[in-house]
Length: 85
Image 1: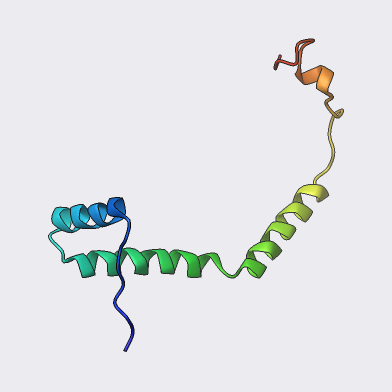
Image 2: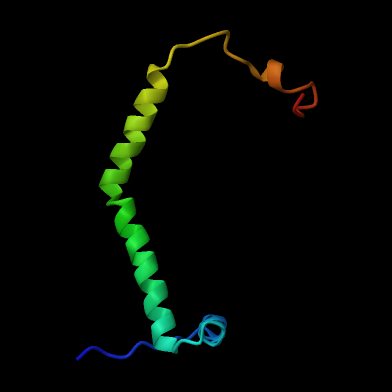
C-alpha cells in the first residue's frame, strides 16, 4: 500500500480547501481533478526529446525564410544613451 500524501505548505492546503468549498467537492476530488488536468497537459506536450525536435524544426523553418532588407544594427535601434529609439 502506498503512503498517504501530506501537504506541508499551509498556503497550498488553504488553496485546496478553498477550491473544495467553492466547487462543493471533496478535497480528494479537487486534488484528483487538478493533478489529472496537469498530467494530461504534460502528456500532450510530449517528451522533452519531442519538444526539442519541434524547436529544432521551427528554428530550421525560420532560418530557411528569405532574408529581406538590411540587417539592423544597434545604431538603428538605440540612441547614444543606449535607450530604444
